[in-house]
Length: 428
Ligand code: 0X9
Ligand code: ZN
Image (cartoon, rainbow, N blue to C red; front, side):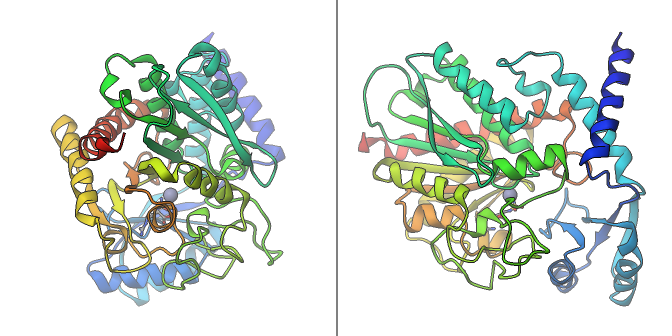
């Protein structure tokens, strides 16, 4: 029966694939091993100049090994030439990405078919935006005193952007707020899974987590970039940006995390070129999805103690600022919060997170959401959490990895929230 089902899923996927799915046939994955800061910088430059080479995350390390680059078959020769010219060590890791993606899709579909909407098994699959919304819609009925579903707007393609507020049902209004969003970047699939896991923890284990809900309301938005995220399920697994066309007919999409209106538009940390993955848009907030996050942040700005934006990957807790090497005035308070999270994780699982300013630790960003949260929306603490890498390119954990990642991450978020509560709860 199981193998018959698997076969059916594979046939259906094959059929769907004919319609839209980019199958990444013969796309190769190379591991690049920069030996020093100069070589790393060179790779970052190449990654920007060669949008066809998806050098995924020119961050400092990938599990302490190299950087991985996904290249189309017709780009392989030019990549190899550059690597040779600059003496950059490298190794072919995978010859045909389509095989892996097909296996991952089959694993996900089979695993998801075991639960029926509106119930979902967060640990048993990656869900689409439509499925997540259906699940979210069911929560206020199931938890009438404690869960409230809100909508601040729609995506460019018209998808409803939902957020859930969770409280302990004591009826006390306007408590200070812990606000979490996820999936600003479409391909970072572990982020919405983790947001859903947090929702389930707070709703189903409310007695165990009474300390988190006593004096605080939680506001959680699992999918910000709904169009991009849906596109990664239906068309192209490694899409990052939104799906709104740009002025350039050749290139669709804007990086939402470069589109926020605080210190927007610097060439250090964002790009004016729609071909690039960090394209910032023509104006700050010219994307409906960043407008929604802006409006949510501003709505809660008089009581926003903690804003957490979930991304992947890299095991980082990144603090503002992204746009300058300087630090916000309460930087060291934020560091204590990050420290609490990192310490809790290392104790629980030996997982290692680095924490500090995003500018210094990862790379500069102009127009990111945490800079806006602190610079304009009055957030006391704002952190970008880069969840652990998974799967082959970091963005693509297997279903079987979800549980390990989200349970570990929850230890960290719980500890950070408790530290925020300990430090700032007098506001309530
Ligand atoms: O580039 C981003 O938007 C974030 N990284 S990701 O790999 N998820 O795309 C990092 C943003 C955090 N801020 C800084 N690094 N300054
Ligand atoms: Zn991201």
